[in-house]
Length: 357
Image 1 (cartoon, rainbow, N blue to C red):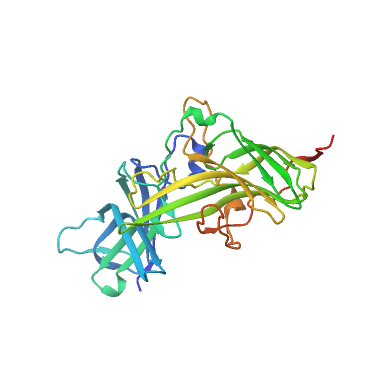
Image 2 (cartoon, rainbow, N blue to C red):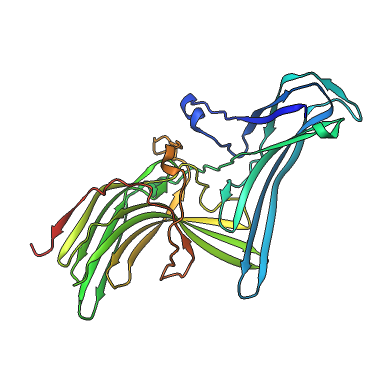
């Protein structure tokens, strides 16, 4: 084999030098730049070197009741550009050594964000083919790349949002649980944090064993006139401090991290999938139904009116290797779930107080 390596390198352009080194995705409508490196052990005779670009979405799931697989797909871009144009039915000799070929490609503006879901994906790939006279030297390599939309978020969702709920339990442990939670914004900026202040009061005879804040992704998939919905945890903060009867628990400015590489809310321009992000604050009471408060979160970039700068920074190993935990079902909606380990493991900043004082 004459070809030792055939590699694709993407060059991410950004005015801010610091952000450029961290950003690993392209924006819709942006000019994609890159370099193809070809390393030959010995010389080859080739009829061309071509790069192909493909962007598409696929959805597939099986219905256990009907024993049928529902499928759908969309193609957003399909294009090819010659990197070594030598004319029709001609050959050129390439000597041994390193050869590099730059490429540019104008991405369409109506591309949906890259997304990898349980029942569907939006994927983008660049593929390079070196076609040689000796078919044994013909080589194909491919490299995926990310496209993420970053719509500007409305200034209104930077206001504090308070959600609260009281629930009265009857029986041998009659009493009330009161839950109030405030988040500093409903804007889920990738790589940023959501600050949480909360108060949980327990007047029942049962123990509160878990207080949990989480960011949830709810994905909807459509195929052949049918729909399936899936929920998954993206980020969690668990407070396992037991709250006994006539006791309360406060959270003080607890930070819930937002993963860095999230698609935009609704997955704009994709017709066979849509996304919804949710902030959930949940209280687990021994032997009773959980109390869960939810409010929408919107993923995008900082509004120019806020004066803030989006981070979009890779948070190191915090987001690597999200292992699967036990599956659980929402009692309220009966949607399937899966989750990863709590991403933020340091203890929750809070305190216990006595309700009898």
